[in-house]
Amino acid sequence: MFENKVVCVTGASGGIGRGLAEMFIAEGASVAISDLDAPSATATEIGAQAYTCDVSKEASVKDFISQVQNDHGPIDIYLSNAGVGSENGKFVAGASNESWELAWQVNVMGSVYAARALMPSWVQRGGGRFVITASAAGLLNQIGSASYSCTKHAAVSLAESILIEHGDQGIKSHCICPQYVRSNMTKGMAMAEKSKDGLLEPRDVANALKAAIAADEFLVLPHPVVKDYFINRAVHTDAYLSGMRKLKEKVGKAFSKKG
Ligand SMILES: NC(=O)c1ccc[n+]([C@@H]2O[C@H](COP(=O)([O-])OP(=O)(O)OC[C@H]3O[C@@H](n4cnc5c(N)ncnc54)[C@H](O)[C@@H]3O)[C@@H](O)[C@H]2O)c1
Image (cartoon, rainbow, N blue to C red):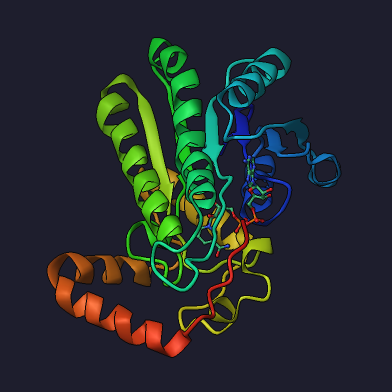
């Protein structure tokens, strides 16, 4: 399905990023994976090329993109997947400014920097596909982490803006919004392991993206029930919020994202 496409994936040393990379490789793409440290071992295992990229730094994102272009030619598909989470602390805005700033830089600006670097050449070419791994927290909420919820909402909005602004110029955009998926981020997280909607594997997310691309759908919902929750939030907002408060009571402080 993606023969000879040049694909970039950030935050891909493991977890969802690795799963996405493996799917594109299986579909015939040439895949460049990056992380804070070049994920060389993962690249060797799956047949990708490894690069260093700190998505919170614009120069690093630009370097990653130009290195891939030099090594493999024009980029066809860019997966902005790196992400961080952190806990609120005792009160809702209790996390430090530094952790809010980091969430903003990684979860939002990492995609802004990449879109800024890629869009001029994509528009000129009349094609390109930008994929952001946001989260169900970007459509709903993440109990225990306001910074994660806020920045993932912004990520969803940015993915929408890309399609709205450049869809007529041949650019595609997708936004991946899973609930819990097995990765370092959910390791040891009781809320993830006990989730009634299931803890998915990274390959499930990759397959959901493949299906969404085939169907030309913007939202990628590896847990299909998220669509029902999203509709419920829009239509019955107070009932949704009351349900989330009850859920919060139930799970207590189980949220333990790292980042
Ligand atoms: N696991 C889940 O349940 C879940 C659910 C919804 C969304 N997500 C999102 O999926 C994406 C991938 O997360 P994952 O679950 O595979 O966890 P993960 O921890 O395995 O992957 C996140 C990766 O991002 C990298 N990263 C962090 N800061 C970075 C930076 N400044 N520059 C470059 N890379 C950086 C980390 O090194 C890590 O490899 C994230 O955006 C996350 O928010 C995860």
